[in-house]
Amino acid sequence: MKDRMVEKGKWPCGVCKKGVGNNSILCHGCKKWIHKRCSGVKGSLRNASQSFICRCCKIDRPITDEFSTDLHLDIGTVASLAKVDKFCYLGDMLDADGGCDSALTARVKICKEKVL
Image 1 (cartoon, rainbow, N blue to C red):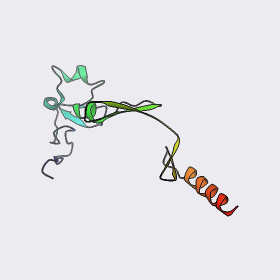
Image 2 (image 1 turned 45 degrees about the horizontal axis):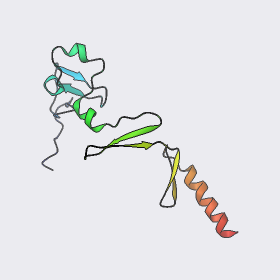
Image 3 (image 1 turned 180 degrees about the horizontal axis):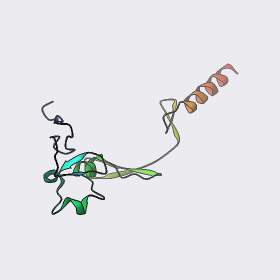
Image 4 (image 1 turned 45 degrees about the vertical axis):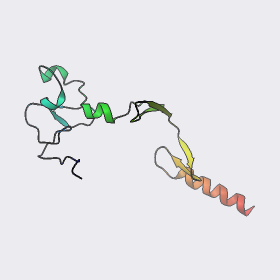
């Protein structure tokens, strides 16, 4: 529990978790304000504000598109995963959108097969 930083203030910094003031920049990844000293930006913050991504987002957030996700592993390798609409896990169907339609359809189908 000692390793976790506790957020402080009304607007905690996305990197150091301490409250930010006027000299900060908005991260377009996590939508949190970042101190200039935590941002790594050299010079004016105005020049970097359009597309700034904090160092936490660059490390933690995977690169995604509509068809695949890159999974960054601790060992320095990247595994690419394909996106699917539904899949079977331990005999249960799971939908990508979190719905239960596929699971219900699969269970009804299994019941019909056992009855017949």
